[in-house]
Amino acid sequence: IKMASVVPGADFNGVWTSVRSEKLAEFLISQGMDEKVAKLAATKEVTQEITQDGKMFTVKTGSHTKSYVIGGSGNLKEVFGNMMLWEGSELVSKPFYMNTSEGAVETRRCIVNGEMVMKMRNEKGETTRYFKRVQTAVQPVTKPATTTQPVQPATTAKPSKSDTKKT
Image (cartoon, rainbow, N blue to C red):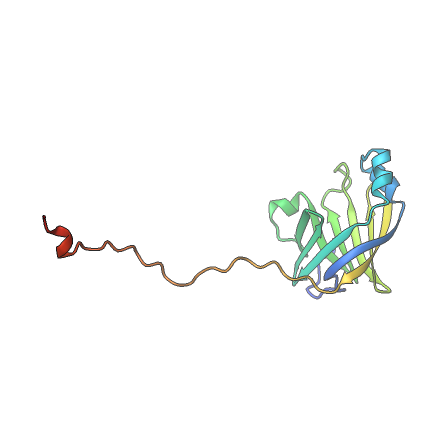
């Protein structure tokens, strides 16, 4: 396995919408999807929101979000999942154990004539999907602001003389 280079080969930042695909229904069936569902899914437009931030690469599709460290970070989630790396101008997501994992998928993304070309393959088949960029930049997810002011301990008010008088 080639290790990732620090400088990315292409800029995938933005929102991408699918415009066409090749052999998608067949590929989905090879992944175990029901034939009728796969044929319907292959006709649907898909939007991917991609954020690249240094070695961090995040893909959001609908309510599903996956984040990767390009070159891998060594944590167990990635060891037993996929590893992202650059191969020239292609960003490749490779399963660590493709030949032993049922349904493991290798995904390759590159930019060709302004379109993102995403090729996915497993041991039984492959598909190619084409996306157009509909928004050039994605706002990074920001964490809620935290206060840097020290918290003052609550004080107990001393009773005034008028509060302590008996009537």
